[in-house]
Length: 469
Image (tube, rainbow, N blue to C red; front, side, top):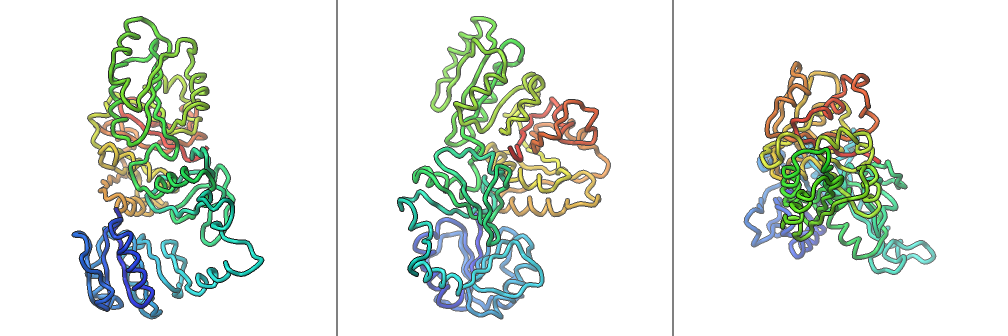
């Protein structure tokens, strides 16, 4: 749940407040600030706050600012006050998302600021009624909700996802609006926070997608897919009971998903009977089968990709090593079981990659997955004094942590090799970007590549998150 600061003054603010209190007051936690007592709502929920003072006073405004505030709306018709309030807020936080009615002059571009020009909004509404011009989406098609425009919030499971990794069945992303520009998406186009997506599809499906995009946690493995599938080679793999227990434990923490367990290369009738007698495998949203004919995981997966909406693949170390190239080329999130069982984990860890954009792309999954299974988040920053955007990445994760209301831990070192550090960790799961082009078959070619070297660790369970198709 977000904590939103509302700074109110004027007629528009009064109308805005009326709509908010009538329809949406329970959606977030709010702080109301106004010099006009009539613009401060009554009978607020317990966690909401009201303050009556002049918000253009920097000293008074700073007193109520906290790190938990994720968004701010400035609704006032006084330009001078808007400027003072904006600069006070931005001096306090560089990452605070600010929406403002009206415009102010800026010395440099601020990606976290949205300025709404009243004249443009009003003229656009009037223009919709003008004869012989194209209509907006609500006047096109059947008018039953098959065309929808949705903004992507920070923390959304769709933020920092490539269009190609999002399963689009009965709906499509046909356009993206960003910084007042139209983008025709390709498979490799990355969706960013504050993007506005134009969707076309079956109306009921679009309403479901709307809630998924707006939901800030509890959605993984969405948007990659819905099905969680575990594969186990009964001939070569070890620890059947351990892997089944981990798959069931993990699935019990996911919402509204489906789990399928595929066993192949059966060896004895005793193993088959043991699976048939396991009542847990017949519970709701859980299915399983034994593949008697196909002996290759690659062939089985190729068939399953066509018939299932796979969002997460679970395998143990033998299958991972045997089919590593193919598994990493699937473009589907992959969890490799390790010697440490999932049930005893306390932390998820991210080694900050050299490419800071990759750290941002996996961030929503890091927080979503960790939140669902109850893990603390640990960031390891190797060589923090090196030239680069380490601080930018850390600030970004701290901002997302506020959105998810989670704390993060940070360790920094110039000397402790990340691989040796990882190998020494206990009760820890590693989450890392799946960069297929860097996962070389031969270790010799990438001795300095942390992501590639990490694939050779067997102690820690690992979750690989694809960056693109």
